[in-house]
Length: 449
Image (cartoon, rainbow, N blue to C red; front, side):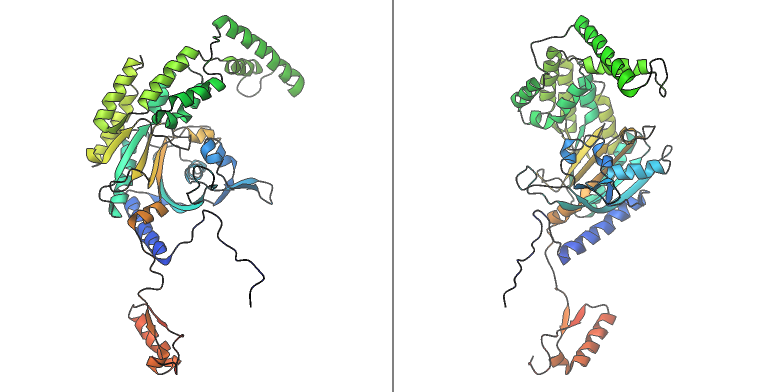
């Protein structure tokens, strides 16, 4: 009889896991936990469901647009976790991580929506991460430990020629700062570094022009000062009439006058179009520099020098690489890519991607340094922090695990054993000896062997 119901299929871009995949995942977890544990990392766990604000404070649009977010019955706006870092940092900060080093490791599923129509349409919406966070120590020595541990984990899983590609947000931000750009302009350039890396400077220029960064109108100092005075007057009126805070009365650690002045400066800050164009040209060239560490560093310095920008910021990256080498990481394993882009906007320093043997197309994981994330999450201090995570599903796929569902099980036939009871006893004895065994009820007595 035909069912009146249609089959309920998996959601698009969700995946089932076979017995072989699960066994491989468990084995990988055991290996990686052992490696991390020997370095002093302890396991921690945070909720799958968190307040949405935790993930949008400083994650950037690429991640925020992929959240599974909804209001829960208690009235909170919540999301399934898209990653672990923010929650792990919250856990550490809530437990007083403000001195010394806190080393945490974690694993579990994460959720990021992917529409079949968007650029991530082929990616799964649910996948498993295993990673680690080091909270407290500053660069560069801590960076070297994390880089070495990330590679050590892959090598222990069988990726003997695993490779790491390292970038540095701090180098790029320091270089852009010398062009006297607004924070808005710098963030725009950082967020478009992936397109610049692939030579799409015209596309980025068009977007910049549409947003007013590139224009023929230059605001001189007198005009900017007049704008500040006008904006300050408007804000003062709003504060006095709309909020009801009389001027002269202190509000917190800053007076209303201080707040108005700060807001006016921010709102009237204009970017010089010529400075923006020079910064864009410099970043377009720098973002395309990648390759062996020594060559990339030399080329990067030349580009900054020709742009009239200090090369001092590259020193931190050089120190990070030196720290990794002191941890036993070989030069052949490391590449530098100044155009390395990341979809999460909280990174402040070194960042990296991990690749399998001879494969530079699909990352197996990545991470980096995020020294000001605690303050963005609402805490009153910056805590130097860094970490990384493997995409365990990608790792298992790269290992080439086959589906061995039901294999290596000894099936005992009741017809061969003489009865169902005898087959059950035989299977029991096999299991006692450590073998997988089950009764083959499809071959009962009387059906023949």
